[in-house]
Amino acid sequence: MAEYKAPLQDIRFVMNEVFEAEKLWGSLAGTQDVIDMETADAILEEAGKITASLIAPLSREADEEGCHFDNGKVTVPAGFVDAYKTFAEGGWSGLTGNPVYEGMGMPKMLGAQYEEMLYSADISFGLYVCLTSGAALAIDAHASEELKQKYLPKMYSGEWTGAMDLTEPHSGTDLGMIRTKAEPNADGSYSITGTKIFITGGENDLTDNIIHLVLAKLPDAPAGSKGISLFLVPRNSVDDNGVVGENNNVTCGSIEHKMGIKASGTCVMNFDGAQGWLVGEVNKGLLAMFTMMNYERLSVGIQGFAAAERSYQNAREYALDRIQGRAATGPVNTEKQADPIIVHADVRRMLLTMKAYTEGSRAFSTYVASYLDIAKFSDDADQIKHANAMIALLTPIAKAYMTDRALDSCVAGQQVFGGHGFIREWGQEQLVRDTRITQIYEGTNGVQAMDLMGRKVVANGGKLYELFASEVKEFIAAESDNPALASKLDQLSAALDRLTEATEYVIGATQGDADAIGAAAVEYLDLFGLTAYGYMWARMVAKAAPKVEEDVFYANKLKTANFFFSRLLPGTLSLLEAIKSGSEDTMALEAENF
Ligand SMILES: Cc1cc2nc3c(=O)[nH]c(=O)nc-3n(C[C@H](O)[C@H](O)[C@H](O)COP(=O)(O)OP(=O)(O)OC[C@H]3O[C@@H](n4cnc5c(N)ncnc54)[C@H](O)[C@@H]3O)c2cc1C
Image (cartoon, rainbow, N blue to C red; front, side, top):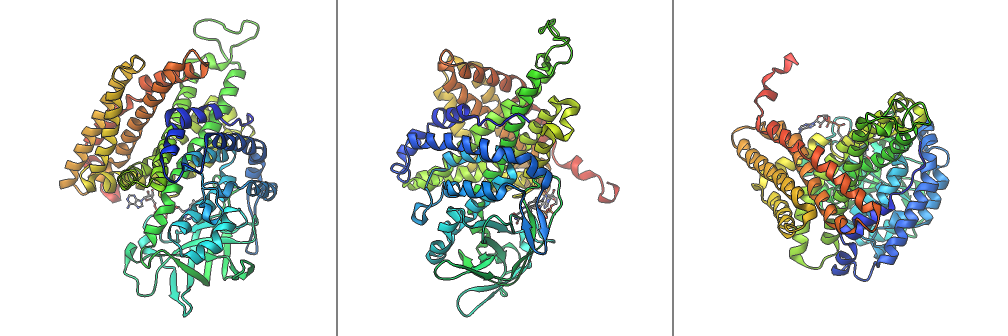
């Protein structure tokens, strides 16, 4: 595998030039005095170094070794404990944490860039850190002051890790069916009893405590998802001085043997009358969990394209080095028997597709992160309302579209290697295996698509969609005189018209057809994602075009944009046609005839 190099130039371009981090952070009440551009840049630089030098070199062997389970204990692969310690000492677990509880208070737009580098280095390792940050986020947003003071500083410092315990054997997507019980105790705490499966990092030997956020039901809770509450359950009890004590009846029953992210322990967790504390309100557990989920869903999207970036770096190096066949236009490398495979149009197609989607994803994740920053750090109620609406709309796209395109890109990167991509030595097959889960956990991509089309678009008659469409139209109007964007604005405008037509169609179709949402949702999310990437690429062109003479980076950006607009964005045409075909053909075959 090629040595990982953090793509800092592109990260800086997206964060600083396209999304104007300095201007945004300078305008928000909560970031004005917290971050300056020098600090942000030093953090990026350091993140690039530590991920490339400390974590990336462990990835291959950690995948080979996997996690070990012995009598309730889970041991992570060799090297992870020391690397985690060094990583935690650098304060990375608390990068975006609340400063009141010893977090660093950095904005998400910066956190998103660091997460990309972390996940590019190794998704499994990154999960231990990022789930801790996600759990801390839900605690910070919804737990009592006492719980925050007791748990957050240790989670931000990386001394304790966090886990998210939703899934049960009979209850995955449909969390309303969970059976884990929470019985109230006289002292205000609860006794939690039940079994959770597939819990990432549920047990590990990185730290001396693990803080579980567990969904459970009170005895008198209403049926279904309206009766779910959220509890903080430490694996080991913690006394009033923060000293870790005995096991709190939280044990690991086994770990899964799985396709990818083998260095991340996926645990069956048993809670046997474990003492837990309510986070948020009774029966409002899903709401509290969603605070974490919006961040986690973006984080999973980032996992995807981070792996795709790694796959691209490997494939690019290989394509420049591997010689096979001759260029269609005549030999390029006359000294050798054959030309490097990068001369072939099909190999370039694969590399450019990866590059266009990955750079588009980096821009899109930064765009969503900018709204997360506005929602968290602004003091203007209207601005916060608008940002929250955009986050609700864009989150399912960030999770599903970024990970679907990421798997496509990882497979393309594998294909560039021919047969060598299929064998272990080059690392491409690990990236394909590791990326596959990103389409499944944190809500499958099919369910994300239903969420987008059902809850975020159809349910409000397209009101949230209008916010996005207006933003894109405003951009098109503002750039209408920009010669660098001329034909691209026409293409973007046509893609937006198709998305608007699809939106109107699905809102109408759902009136008389109960299956309309399920049948069209994935194509609708793809059409939305592709159009949104068109918007991202247009914004990148607007910033890169004036600088083409300054650095070849900007000229290359325009060439990649040309490929995106000519070869990928036209996919909106076929997606619209598929959506408009309705649900009839999908539902026609009788279940027993499948
Ligand atoms: C490696 C790994 C790590 C994980 N980590 C965690 C973790 O840390 N914490 C945690 O709580 N969980 C975790 N999970 C669980 C994960 O989030 C679930 O597997 C996922 O949400 C899907 O649930 P399920 O497996 O029960 O599938 P099901 O819900 O049974 O779904 C099966 C299929 O049916 C589809 N489907 C289901 N309902 C609908 C519907 N209403 N409409 C249309 N299609 C539908 C799904 O899209 C899917 O294709 C992890 C899973 C894995 C494999």
